[in-house]
Structures are given as C-alpha cells and as structure tokens.
View (tube, rainbow, N blue to C red):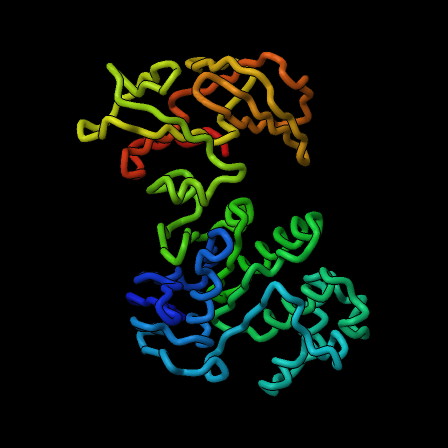
Length: 357
C-alpha cells in the first residue's frame, strides 16, 4: 500500500495545527514522526487514519483520494500511548478480535504465535485489569499486529512505560516491523528511538515538516538548525562563529581549519554533538580548556557540563567517569566532526561520517 499526502494542512479555528506539507512514507517500511510535544505528530496521524479531515490537500491510498472516507472503512491498525484494550475480554480474545471479525481459521494458533512474540503467552486467560501497564500495551500491540492492516499507526506507544520496559519493547518492535509487510508510522519525541527503529524519519516542529528521508541520512545531515535540535539527545552544543581566514573562527575560541562554500554568510553557528567531545586528545583535535559545572551518570554514559571560553558545553563520555565540581578539564574535538550552519540556520557543512552520535 502506498500512502501519499499531498499539500495537506490543518486549521482549527484561526489556529494552524499543520502547515502545508507533502509526504509519501516508504511502503512496507517504518517511518518515524520525530518531534517535541505539539509538533503536530498526532494531528498528522489522525489525518492519515481518517479520524480527521485536512483543511486542504489530498490523502491518497494507492492513488485514490480517501479524504472523507471514515476510519471504519479503512484498513488501518492503531496503537496509542494509553493501554486501550477490551476490559471485558480476556487477553486471548482481545488479540483474536480482528481475526474473528475477518472470519479467519486457525485463530488459536495465530493468537499464541503473536502472544509468544510479545512474551505474553502466560497471560492469555487473564483480563487486562490483571496486567501491568507494559503487559497491557503488549496486548494492544499484539491485537494491532493480528489485524494485519497494510497501514499501522503507533502514537508514542511506549511513552507511559518505564525505562527498562521501553528499551526491551523497542528492540522487539524493530524485529516485528522488519518481519512484517505493513507500512508503519511511529510517532515519538525521542531521537534515540528513531535511531533504534531505523527506516525513515520525518522531523516535525510546530506543525511543520522539516525533513524526511532515511533515518541515518537525516541524523547525519540535518538540513537546518531546527532539524539538528530536534534530532539530538542530549541537545547539540551550538556555538557562535564567523568566517575566518582559512576556516571558521569560534567566538572567543580557536580557528577551525576547514573549507567553506564561497557563498557562506559571515555569521555562522557551529554545532557539536555531545558524543563528539572527548577528554583525551586524538590526532587533529582542537582543545577547549574549561571547568566542570556538573557531571551526571546516565546508564552506561557520563554527561559532563563544562564551562569553556566559547560557552557551556556538554560532553557525552562512554562509561562511568568521576569529576570534581569546579575541576579543570580540557575537552577535545576534531573539526571534521562539527556541523556548520549559516546565518539563516541552514546546513553548510556536516561531519565526516563515522564520527559518533
């Protein structure tokens, strides 16, 4: 199934919820809608599903305009962040409900297969109220997969789960989506989730579609500062700079030797992902001395906030590291691993691939 949205927009009263945008998610693949809360992800998905009608534009399914066709007449499966199941039905009957509606055979076997994939086979005879939140969301996912719809919409389905459950389910979902043939639209606020799911990513902000393409390409080559901000966790370090003799001059810092387009504006912004900063020097690195303002351990990484002459920077270090507050530390980075944006916030240069997250 090929879903295509042509020049759609959405207004509610005088307020624009979605600005003019066009997108054709890759058929049979995962497309992640990535953006902060109120970026427009849910509004876009509701139009895709047929729950809402766009104020302008067309929604095409295999070339046919389906604007105005209600959701009950479309073959769409949906999973929300809330755990929506039939409370009066046992887990096995929740999962089986779309199969029974289609009058399929071998329902018991199919239900067990899906339950085993999502590790809920031991709960088949329980009611949803007897399950934890994570288990209930697995039931909702199993029912959506049982429907076998060519279009599957998942609106932040893991947001209400704890960190450990989210990590576990993300990996399982990646495998399940890869094994299926549905076009999957998955909304999230988390850049890490988009990277893990892979496929394609559409970055949204304040009702605008900023960039769409293969996830790795969008991550490594964000076309603007707005995309870079949306697709960075922790936030990208942004530094004021200008065109210098033979490179980019950081405000209050060193000159970075790099070639710039002849059309580059004088005022620039340099972006560095936190993982591009290190506390040990490598070949060709530039150094920035500073003092530790904060150090925090998160999972298997350590985030160090350092005040430097060019501003406060956050470094993401692999492993557990300990720093005394106020201690002197030198950060290192390679100029080949920085982003450069022009005065309009559009990308001029991106890092050489392989320079980390």
